[in-house]
Image 1 (cartoon, rainbow, N blue to C red):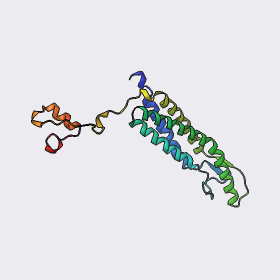
Image 2: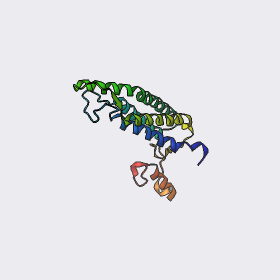
Image 3: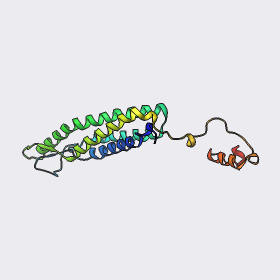
Image 4: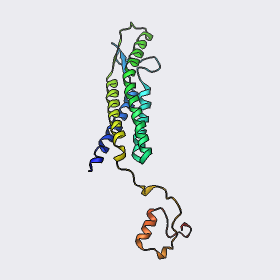
Length: 190
């Protein structure tokens, strides 16, 4: 594998994994009231941070678009993915205190003596996923210009089509026409 493509597979795998883990963790409670593990929280977020899920899904979309685009669009989407990853890290850091406050308020709303709250393992999972996504995005921004691109073979044909009589075409020319989406046996297609 050439040196310039060395980071392609690991970066895409790490970025997709990091953002996917954040999407999952954002839907789980990041904090619970102390002494009441498994209690149903009664406020609107329930110790969850939905912004993490939203940003993670945007990050996953950026990784998908990065794989199928070329040139300038690819660089722009990689940069957008890096911005989303920075937002994921910030959300994980700030979201911890937000989730803890939510869990503390829920304890009061349930009529219990406030005993504080603690973070769950989902916050750690979200933080690790966000940092992984950020590292992968930084690699993508740096190396995306050197990564392999999808071929133009499956792009829509552009410009005027070549009109040749199928009787004049050899076998290779017939197969090329079929590969380009033309039916050499259809009189209306040439």
